[in-house]
Image (tube, rainbow over all chains, first blue to last red; front, side, top):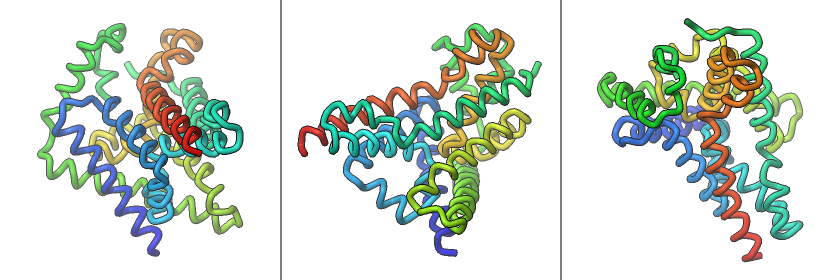
Length: 117
Length: 156
């Protein structure tokens, strides 16, 4: 039960940060979400984000900041093995599932559903 | 992405002026405290569902570190399906960032663009405009990961 509570709490709080930025700053959702990814990437570089995932599970895994963390982790782990070129080869190692899934599901939904109006 | 359908001038979609207007239209909404509570409950609920799916994969014998990807894929599928059915927009109007910040928002922006621009054809519409909103997230993520990765490669 603990894992559900922490996922709800941390996931909810991360979304509250996003809502505050939406409502209180002139930033567009695109700016805010890009900011989340950059923040997740920097926290990932220090290894902080993985500890948050250990602690909050899906509460830290599902917010888009996790995408930045996964990009950084993929780049860093390949860089440790293959040097600077590893940054390029490892970049999408962990995130390719999400991007591929979003492209495929988006495409198939576009085949099935028609735009409104 | 609900405002998009209400906009009669589709060709202005990527126009900065239009984006600003979209943003301004967003502003007069229910009071901040209500938005915050909705975002908290909505985002929390998405992550709760995610944790349930994650635990399900782990209970099937999947190692903890490998269970994340199928969980994200499942959530992306649900979000894409709800977008296609037109339910996502209604939910997003209530919970705001609660659905925009999790990967559901990423999936919704790609799917809604893919469907919206189907009228311009599968190649020039769906294919090329799919990432019109989600692209910035990937670009800035990659730039961040490149900088952090290079620094870590130089340190080690």
